[in-house]
Image: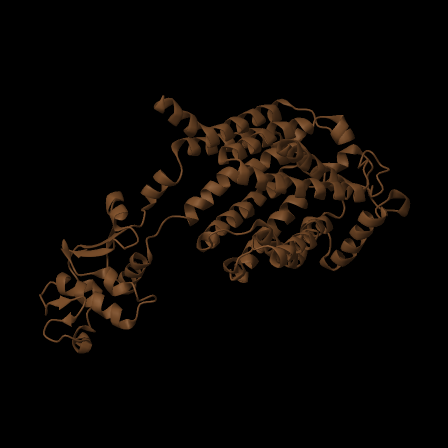
Length: 486
């Protein structure tokens, strides 16, 4: 059922864009706003009658939802407004770019930089201008340490003292901590020996910090020695090796190759790929998708479990509000003066609710009723808010938008059920199958009317390559491990 609803969700999205083609910014805001009463209605019910939303969830900082909503709002704008002139099959293919783009931002943003003690020690060394190298402690040491820190500092092979004991209660570190560690390192590194210094107690001749002032003039450039920070942080090389498997890297490259094949006609006459500029705008939405997803992974690291309705509601609120601030960007994208945005929103509301057409040739507007206007931005389409112009849309805006919202909500619910009661493999299988089924659905007149799009050699080959990349990314490791086990 999730596959059927997911396919209907993708097809109905394009039908919605066609039905209200001149008011895409309105649609972007509307499809966010509708989620507010739905999500907060469920949230209120859960707060009053269930214990699904815990105090831990309600204490989650709301400013983090603002960051998520900011990226999600930009993502929605680029998809809804930017996708107006992108053919349905290309939309389906370009969104698969979220896989390699998310991989890229995950690699950049999710590298393990060590526990709190290691990060503090690194900060002190950098602030004092001490040249050092950082060494991974090793899997065995990290495993044996458990919840304790493996952080050590070696100077010429000599351990300067119990760094975790000094730093575990010092976040951010005090100036005393800075001085203690610096003195311990400098006593081992200076070309001329100085008073022996212990990291816990201070100078050996005075068991307090009074002698620290004697070393306040030390220049880090005078230190001679090998300073090594032993930590559980992953180097970039280790991070790239472990975060994703070789099969996933190969799969991502194959996906990108398939997208290049699919979009290749856009470098010429466009063909089934649509205008190159709008393809790139639509594809750029995957950057917002990736950053938002990675940030959510970071932000929710401190929360045991976040209720999906609570999450969606509190993200949708700033998403809608920030979307209003994106009005100037939307104006540029739809070729409107910024002061014309309020009127465009008002007309979009009437187009949706009443089926009123404002852009018509009978009113002297420069618009086209031709089939090609839907994929050529230089030919503005006439309104077909009432669904009476089949070359534009044979479905009224009211029906198309409501249909999309119903399928979208149902699809999100089914995905949650698949994840909760199924498995990760089932979720990946469902998402993968949607690519060919969705693309095939765009070729049927029964679904798309006059906007049905036949496969050409580029979209067909591109679809096959992208699908091969997805299969490699999601299932190659599992299959390989099973073969090795057998």
